[in-house]
Amino acid sequence: MHEAPILQCLKKHGQKFGVEIAAATGISLLKVPAPSRMRRISRCSATRFNDGNPVDGMLS
Image (cartoon, rainbow, N blue to C red; front, side, top):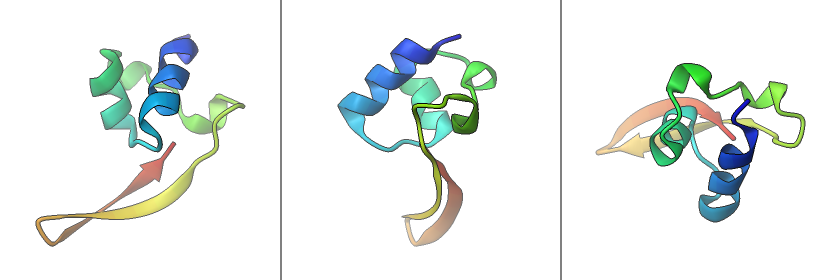
């Protein structure tokens, strides 16, 4: 599993969407585990706005 680089990314940058974690760590999005499978990471739903358009997702 890729838990160590993901935890390092989150510690350094704070909450991120899965796609942002994949980009920051170089891990394929398909290999970024769901936060619920990584017991040391919590998650919540969030809405961000990009140019006024809502983007719903799950933050880790």
